[in-house]
Structure formats: C-alpha cells, structure tokens
Image (cartoon, rainbow, N blue to C red; front, side, top):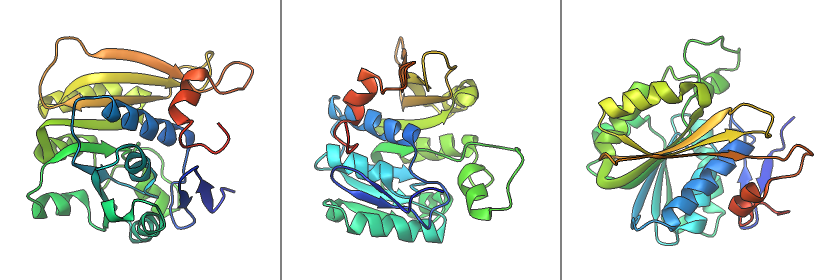
Length: 244
C-alpha cells in the first residue's frame, strides 16, 4: 500500500486522496523539465500543469524556476483539493494555483498564453479498466485524449513557449504525428529505461510551436544492473530526493 505522503527535501506531497501516487518516472520527468527550462534562454513567467494530480510537477518546477507563476488544472475534485493542500503547505504557495476544471473548460474561459505547459496525461485508451473510477479517470484518456491534448496545447502555448509531456514509450510515434498536425514540433525526446537490460517504458518530450532542423534524441536509465541509481538520475533528482 502506498504511503499517504511523499517527503522531498523542500516540500511534502500528501497523496491519500489522489488515485495516482507520486512515482519515479513522474519525478524524473519533473526534474528533467525543470532543468531544461532552467538552462534555456526561455523566460518562463507563467506555466500551466495539465492534470496536476498531487501537484508534484508544479512543486518541482516552483522549486527550480524561482519567478514562475504556475496554474495547475485538475478535473477530479479530491485530487484538486489535495494539490491545493500541498501547494498551501509549500514555500511557494504565492506562485501556485489550482483550478478545479477540465482543461476544456479552462481553455474556453482563459485568454492567457503560457510560456511553459507540462503534462503527465492519462496514458491508456480503450484498455481494460478497473472498478476504481478515480484511477480510471487518472489513467484512461476518456476525458482528454491525445489529439485533444495536442489541440489544447497549441491553443494555449505562447508562440515562443515549451510544451513538455510524459508518455508511454509505445505511444510516442502516435503523439508526434498528432502534435505535428497541431503545429507542435519535437525539440527533445528522452526514452526512459528501468535498467540497462530493459526496453524503454516512458518517453519525456519537449515540443515547440515552430520546427527545428534536428530534434535531440537520448535515453536515460534509472538504475544500474546492480540496483543503484545511475549517476545521471542522481544528478537530476539530487535537489529533490531526501537521500541523494
């Protein structure tokens, strides 16, 4: 059974009311995006987190990118309340805001464009579902499919902004096609492997609203064959994980 909270170095994530708990690949994604933005020339004044869940991605961004104001959208009422609790107890509560709407509602109501949009979206379409409706909403894309995600991002993203997304490795090619139709073009792609012996199970990607000549494609391995974290994983997570 998952713990009711996950303790980071500078903040705590309560998660008892969220269907999807804090997990390693989401933490890696948050740290990677924060590092990419920190090292870029992009000045991120405002960011949008689509499907925030516990709020962990927004909190990691807020820790690293000091001046950014972040709006976090969450359709599930319990998860939205939990994210708000996590934001309020963090050192960056003045820069974090939870919006308890669907992204479709938010899109119809806002006039803002965002310098950064980040999403760890529902992963599965047309797969066997569980009896847990909250987990279904978090895992399955019946409320936000990938085509709609791409269209929404294209509408909300600033013309010099970044869009970062975490997806299962097997859905990467599909999403790249959908993104290109929505005039979002691949900038960087990192395949994530559990160990050197495993095939990639996730992909972390950044898209831009304009095309570049040659996207960067890499991979990262979470753990060495003997079970210890790799140096690259430690470098990304050392500012967040307690025991790194």
